[in-house]
Every structure is written in C-alpha cells, then in structure tokens.
Length: 386
View (tube, rainbow, N blue to C red):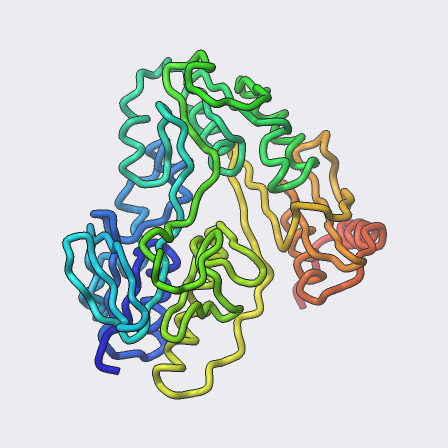
C-alpha cells in the first residue's frame, strides 16, 4: 500500500489505533490529524482533577503522544478535515489541501449540544473560563448526565454555589438506574448542591452568574456528508468497525450494531481492537478473534467511584444484591430475558467483579442466589495464601 493509513481524530480512540498499529508491527506511513492544537489527551479528568488543578493539563497527554516522531507517527495538530471522497480515497482539509489514504480511520468523536449563552466543557481550553470565575460565582448546570453531575460535584468542592438542573429525574438516573441516582442525589444535597427539576430553554431562566450546558453530544460527521458512507447518529459500521471498502470508524463517532457508546474504556478497547485488526489485514494475515471484554465505565463524585459493568440502563430487571441505597455501599445486579447483563455499584468492587464474571459467562439471572453467594464469600473472609 503506497498511501498511508490516515486517522482523522486525535482523541483516545484514534491515538490508540495509531499506537496499536505500531505495536502490532505495522511499519508503513501513518498519519494522525487532530483539529486541536494540543497533543492527544485524556478527557475525563477535565471535569475532576484538571478542573480542581490537582492534575496538570500536561499530565493528561496520552502515552506516546509526546514522542510521536519517535514512534514513526506523523501527528499533525490544528488540522481540520472538511470532506472525504472514498471513490478516490482522499480527504480534504479546511485549507483546501487534499490527502490520499490507503485506509481511513474516522475517529472524530462528538461535540457538545449547546444552549445559547451557556459554556460547555469538552476541550482542555474550556477550563480557562471556569478558572477565571470569582470563587463565589454561582453556577447553574443544565443536564445531569455523567459530565453535568461530575462538574456539579467538583465545582461545589471548589466552593461555588451550584444548581444542577436534572430534568425529570435524579442525577444519572437514565444512565445508571434509580438506585445509584438516589445515592448521588443524596450526596449532592448533602454537599450543598441545589437540585432543580424541569426543562430549561434559556439561560435567562436561571439565577446564576454562569451557566454550563451538559445536554449530551452530537457525532462529528458533517465532513462526511456526500461521501456515500452510511451516517445515522454517527458512522454506521459492522461489528469490526468497517464503514466502507477502505474506511473504518472508532470511538464516540462510531455506531456499531450494538449502538454508539460514549465511554472512555469503550473507546480504548475499540481502538486496540481496530488497530490489531488493521495491522493483520495490512500484513495479509488472518485477523485474530476480537477482544472479549465486559464493557466497563465509571464516574467519580466526592471522592467515591461508581462502577458499572455491562448494560445497566434501560428496561432491565434490577435487584440490590449487597448493601443498600441508604448507605454509601450498594451493588445492583441487572438482567434481561433471564440473563445477567450488567452490574452497578458503589463501594463494593469485589461484588461487581464477581458479577462481571456472570456477565461474561452469560449466566442466568438469579439475584437472590448471587446475593447469597456474596454473603457466603464475605463470611469466609479473604482466601489464605497457600
């Protein structure tokens, strides 16, 4: 292949594909285009450690991104792509430059939905506006998903008066279920966050010095309009990430048969999977079996971590199997059609790891039996080394 592997998007997913290709022995030309001026970096800390300034922005740089040339990766920053032509295997930059590709990896991620007059937090440069606020500036956050809820916790810890507009339910109810949402609502209230329900259509409705919009996201696919690639709330792909004859999509922008997933671990896992597959195809060898991993994600609030394995949202069977929602320790087992599909909890990591094995094995959904097994394991205590 004379033309390079071209990766459009220098976030976690795109950069993971690039580094995995090198780790898997691909020695050909490899170009990564990012539209930001910064090397690839981790985004989740933006709402936590980076906002608190306990994590330096430079510390967010992804492994290898500071030595791209050493890895043989042509990392081009502040390059915006505006068009793609699969027929000629070219993409076009905003300055009119056309670049050819042998294989194209689409990793352009998502952008936040906006509310006129409100700030958003997606890029590292977005933090400057929040750092510049007076310590007593009142902040209203519209949207109580992962980002909104985390920002509310962090900004309250920094001393700001915070109002969190949650729509019709408790924070993260749609994403993690009612049990965890109940705990998070209690934590927010205990730490002085004002919870408000309802729909906001204008920042004028909120008594705040600054408003943050955390209203979800939209995939960055406009540059693919007219390309002929399948687009519908992202780039449609098969289970391997293929979107066209020589085009692939990965990360938040990719919509695989199972849907579009916006979680850090999902982006990392998908990036490794696609990098391994592409390296094998380019070396004309049989790709290995795809990675078999139970989906995992987490969120941090007030020094505690909520962990989730598998699928924990939507129309599922649910039962508390350890702890309770009245404590800061709870584990919930989720099932669908008689099969364990997910587990979510706080302060009970061993219970969740045991549940992850049930998810991986496709075990039958029997929460009472699982709860009994957890009690037995707790009574037995930790295994003694032999």
